[in-house]
Image (cartoon, rainbow, N blue to C red; front, side):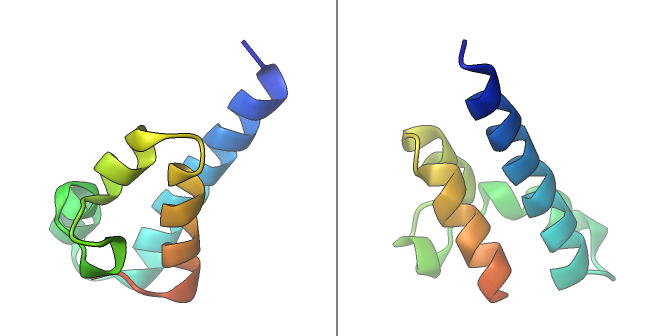
Length: 71
């Protein structure tokens, strides 16, 4: 296991989680279900599908969150 890469993935996932709290401060249900909802900005895939598809998936979703494109 590549520890630095694992730490970076964990950091990115925590940043995604924090970003969802900022994007949807009043909708806890949306924050918790967002990763399983189809997203047009991801070509109709869910954020979870994108994150599981390969090494760059978490980065794609993180970039989406950073741009403030939640839905």
